[in-house]
Image (cartoon, rainbow, N blue to C red; front, side):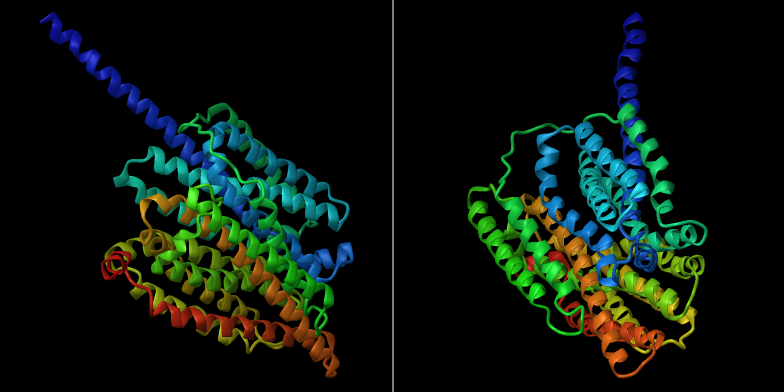
Amino acid sequence: MNESVDAAPAQAAPAGAAAIQRKKEQRVIWLLLGAAFVTMLNETVMGVAIPHLVTDLGVTLATAQWTTTAFMLTMAVIIPTTGWLLQRFTTRQVFIFAMSAFTIGTLIGAIAPSFTVLLIARVIQASGTALMMPMLMTIIMTVVPAQERGRFMGRISIVMAMAPALGPALSGFILNVASWHFLFWTILPVAIIMFVVGVRSLQNIGQKTDSPLDIISLPLSALGFGGILYGITTVGGGGSLNLVGLISLGAGALSLALFIWRQVTLQKSDRALLDLRAFASGPFALAVSLVIVMMAAMFGAIILLPIYLQNVLQVDSATTGFLLLPAGLIMGLLAPVVGRLFDKYGPRPLVIPGSIVASATLWALTRVDEHTSPIIAALGLAGVALGISFMMTPLLTSALGGLSPKLYSHGSAIIGTVQQLAGAIGTALLVTMLAVGTNRAAAAGANAIAAEGQGVSFAFLIGAVLSLVAVAGSFLVRNPATAKAAA
């Protein structure tokens, strides 16, 4: 009798300890979800502020958009290293570095006296942001049971889709009552609180390893992506070819080619920073290609529309933020719905209509001018967001589903990198086309407002043409299981 009585606490103890551990892990996940939301919100928060930066700091539109482009470029350079960092250092160490970098960058941005200092602040912020989402995904895959991962990954999708889309709306509300410095002062207290809570409560998850890091790949990656992006930004900014831009494009292309060559060489001994054998999978290569096109279109639209609303339609910052808000809400609310639809129907019934809606909306936006209603412009961004919402989750799931388990981590790193790179290229390309179109219209005799309206229309024309690639490619998307069976 005594033995049976004593056995109950003995059996209950492990169960109780497991429950306590699970609650701790849940708190960690919620903390990282909040931190990821704040840091990714910051990715697009400067979009509405670009006209203010032009006025306050005396820079051009092409220069001011680097507050967004540099942020995304920094993430594209750092994300490939996150797999190594998360293996080499503890969870607490990575979190402390990430939130420290983000908080310090936010403080520097809040007091930045010049555009150069502001740009440095954005790069420091991005260095922390780049680590947050991979760390969150790694922890979820480590501690969440397989049967519950879909629910948690749905929350990640909400963060990934909703935070960048809500950035311009938040920025618009703040800029209506304060200077662009308060975009940073508003976020700073939240960043400090999350840093303190994380240091006090975050526990280490997983095991450290002595994985090698290829130092040579890092500068090749930075020079390749940076050179190409700088070249795209400057090569046609004045309406004609720019020698510096052409040289930058050439140097970037050469560095990127060397980076790819080095990865192909190192992957034979499993030492590559990015294992490019993932592209041998047809579903992965196709999905990544479509992600590049649609992310470029989305971020380009997120940057162009605030400029158009404020400079051409003369809408104030608060109204701009309000008009851009529906796009963010659409992406956030649809993320879990699309996930369930994908589980039931597969990617094709979602990706094909999604690409058509996004492309049709971009073509409609080519008709905007100085007389267009601001509501029409807002509906345009909402339409792009609607179409892309039906594409992103199916494409990302199909991409990874087409890989062998050995390549999952490299596939995730590649997807994260190309997402940022595509967004940066889309931003740089469409802003450059805006400048080209504006200069040509002004040279033809249009006044300043009408010329910039024509510039926006021309930029959207480039985006609409590119979107046709996504529409054509969407008909080639297959269920990963079907693709493997066909192979």
